[in-house]
Length: 96
Image 1 (cartoon, rainbow, N blue to C red):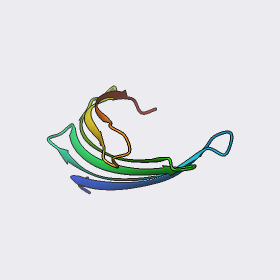
Image 2: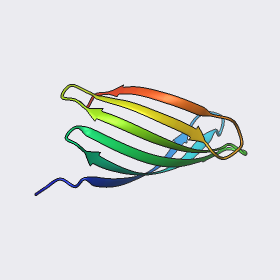
Image 3: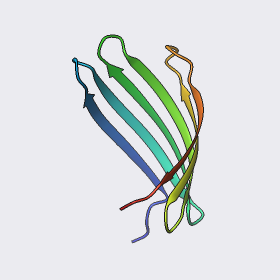
């Protein structure tokens, strides 16, 4: 069976900390495998927490899959308007 060139994902997470601090997060993403070892991924996440804690972000990532690890270059943007966040991200990840 041929592996699909397109994929999607959804993550739903709740993090709890001390003093009734918590965060609920919904993350949605779509991606495409192209060439042999490259992926392009677009994701959005909405995070809500205790009080008026709120964050809405988007990220576009280019991933190079290598035998020993994955290298990701991404641009992240916070679009809720509650604070200013624009970032370039470089990540190295390894599956175990």
